[in-house]
Image 1: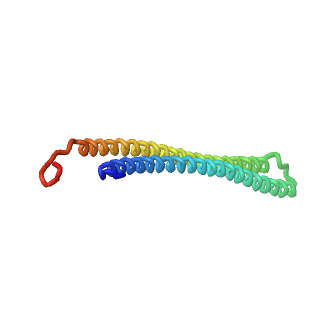
Image 2 (image 1 turned 45 degrees about the vertical axis):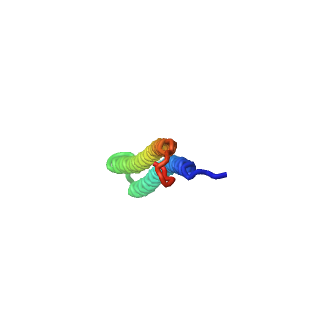
Image 3 (image 1 turned 60 degrees about the vertical axis):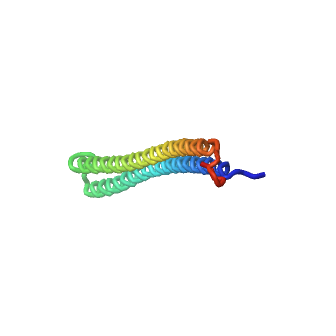
Length: 169
């Protein structure tokens, strides 16, 4: 069985285009998967930031309680009423600044979590865009390959005439 070179060329063009299209599609899907994985990792980072913020707020509260306990002991040792006057105001200030520091720790953690989530959303959007680009490239490759195959088919399927010396025209 003898296969014409034109048939081989047509098949090679079609196969090459198909492989190129599959490659573009797979590359886009891989970028999409990577974007989604990066979003998942960013969510883990966000949750970790919130946990660290809570832990820092708890540490601030413990330190403030220790300071307040030492203040009460020192004030009581001097015979002062720890709930009135300057002694009471001192403890109120300790409570206030403890609350401010706890709030700051939680706010900073929330900002870190928000930043991580935004980065994750951006990673996912980039992955989705890469997948769409891969799909478009695959479709364009298939269209281009189809045009090439059709052009070669049209060129090679023309009736061949005699041009002397056995050549084709």
